[in-house]
Length: 449
Image (cartoon, rainbow, N blue to C red; front, side):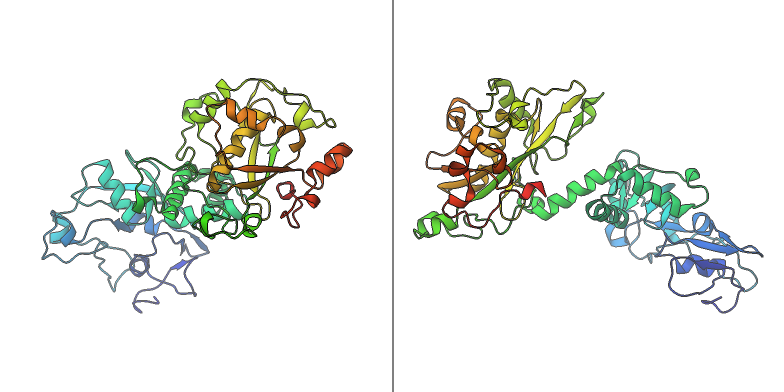
């Protein structure tokens, strides 16, 4: 044995560094703080998967004596069962007489725990002070285990595997089902279907917690959630009191330099099917990220006039196909605004389409995006069909109680350079970015990439 140098070793670990071999007792004690490693045991012919840690390792989630009134202060805290390492055998023996701490031990149960190294079943020693589901949840979180249920936890995910999936989904576009299939395959490569599995629906709560911690919600504790308060916006775009001075300190030549430049576009492939049970679609952060708040947007759509003017320019599909409707779809696309230079989406501006890219949808998205730049007196809006959208935009805003802009704001409209080639010749002189002062070298097509 690599640890005790006495007993004959027969266990090895697939995840530990090196090629050490242990007896049963030393293998369990060595992995007291590495409980989710994969152990293999020599059966006389080959190494096979072992249930040694499942049968003999107990994860102790009890508090330290000074944190729990049920445990005497003078009792030395032990994190695992005392192991009796015998010279005559490799078996793990339980202590014959329980210690004083064991007399104050709480209940014990078995949990399925998902880690990046596999799916395991481990015995859990609860603290005697835990009497409610909330207290059990706190004990699991202290041990960096996120419960799949907060009422009666039977499954938990390690913080590490949740972070692993979050990065995988971000960089590799991995779906939750595919990620769990990979974990099942790591656990049992020959028969992955026999592995107990729990879907990663809990990852939504994990991401929401990450967003709130990053935004400082725990420290600020706002009474009312802020529109787009959890989202990150472009740090280079001009934002008063963040990266540019107040308007009163601007020089005359700074007004065009500090003018926000937004590109607007719709995506007809981001559709959403009608759910059989829409009440099951619970939003954890409605309106706090990039999507607009559902109730306010629904009120706007309910009171806005359902008319879509025909295009006076060329046959633009986004304009003339506004009556496109599919009965099996809850959303026929998405519309959004982003900064024209860097392509960062503006918080709280993404809207759903109901019958295609209608002006009532894009008006709401643009007004919400411009709220992020309150205090500015100019804005450049680059839109593929700006020649039609801009005709009565100010009138639509004035007639709606759900759309608002400040009176001093002057909006300059433009069409992206690639789309401008499909317009009629009269649109070129009016909406080309080449003739707009202060536009710079912006092509206005960054959302097409």
